[in-house]
Length: 149
Image 1 (cartoon, one colour):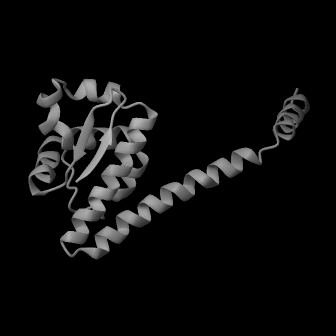
Image 2: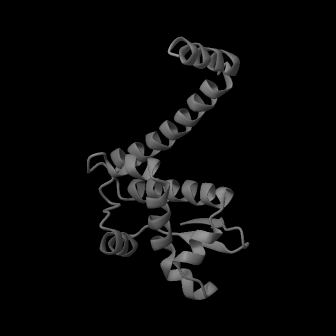
């Protein structure tokens, strides 16, 4: 089980088990126990579609809603950037732990690689943005605009 705090200082426990996996499948049509399936694969979708990931995480937390007297919409409101980053990390680690304990090291490794790919993609984007020569971009755009006039 993975624990994280939201922006209201509430502790949330993410737990992947057969019951929570079935709940996610029933509610969202997503089979967390087969992360390599689909086109694109579920792992890719979860890594690139933050709203989908938020829905999955909120569904995994549903059993705790009563404790804090909240609903899914209130959970989404409490998922600011930092909270969502913590929840995202907890979700990936919970997937890894689940598959490792099941002896599905292939799936655990796939989830771990997806985490690394996301971090590498963010770093590559940051580097590209940092190296962007704004003056050159503007000059090129202006040259194209004036030559076509």
